[in-house]
Image (cartoon, rainbow, N blue to C red; front, side, top):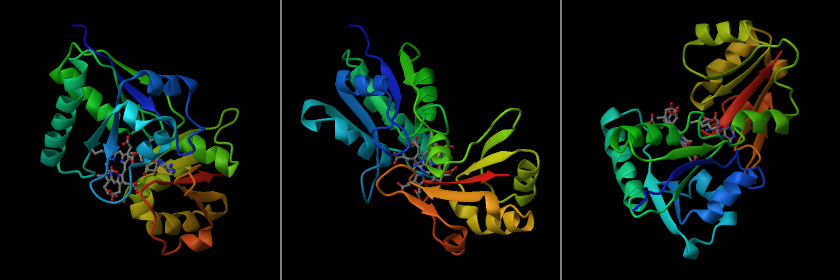
Length: 234
Ligand SMILES: C[C@@]1(CC(=O)O)C2=NC(=C\c3[nH]c(c(CCC(=O)O)c3CC(=O)O)Cc3[nH]c(c(CC(=O)O)c3CCC(=O)O)/C=C3\N/C(=C\2)[C@@H](CCC(=O)O)[C@]3(C)CC(=O)O)/[C@H]1CCC(=O)O
Ligand SMILES: C[S@@+](CC[C@H](N)C(=O)[O-])C[C@H]1O[C@@H](n2cnc3c(N)ncnc32)[C@H](O)[C@@H]1O
């Protein structure tokens, strides 16, 4: 039997209309929809984006657990379980669509999954479908052009190393800081010190029906959701 193909579908930053026609078509065609499953709380973000387009009764819905931790042992156990669960369908000749929010080639669970699938089952065919990433979604919702002419633009994960964050800000015309929630307070202090607060914007769950666009005043002391990014334009 021919093996099924594994598709990594980018499903955009939140608004279900911000999904490509190709991803939409793959969602209709693939009999198996794999999605990140949260252990507690609401449905995952990617799951909620695509449920508008899927009738779960007509699909095999495959919820996979991706622990959001840096603990390598926990990660490798769960990644391996996900690879096995997906392969069970592929070996029956069924195509699997794995949905990831934003773009699948940008800080995505699909990158990890793809790597382990290649190592474990090198014969599996994989294909990705580009998605609109959170930084594209944010720039457009905020009405902030990221780059023009010879501008330098950076997209980096914010870390505790404020000297490095300063260096990036000094050497670019626009910077999108992802994963900014944990270091928000330090980032605001740095931007204030560099006199850049006027060009700083933060947005949570951009384009979704839970979107929040923050003012700088509201941000001080705020508890930001992980799905938030900061756009700084000089
Ligand atoms: C450990 C930590 C460190 C870090 O961010 O670096 C981390 N995620 C953290 C928190 C967190 N992540 C998410 C929420 C729920 C938000 C909500 O729903 O409210 C929370 C909050 C929470 O759990 O508290 C959701 C989420 N995460 C990713 C996607 C996209 C996707 O699935 O594609 C989605 C949307 C999925 C969906 O819902 O659709 C993707 C990634 N997250 C990773 C790591 C990498 C995978 C692990 C690995 O293998 O390393 C990878 C692939 C990024 C990468 O590799 O760069 C950090 C710990 C806390 C911290 O330190 O702040
Ligand atoms: C693991 S990365 C996922 C990036 C995603 N694959 C993409 O293409 O945008 C998660 C970080 O991206 C940013 N992010 C992802 N989705 C977002 C959204 N809907 N609104 C705002 N920021 C988002 C946040 O900074 C978050 O910490």
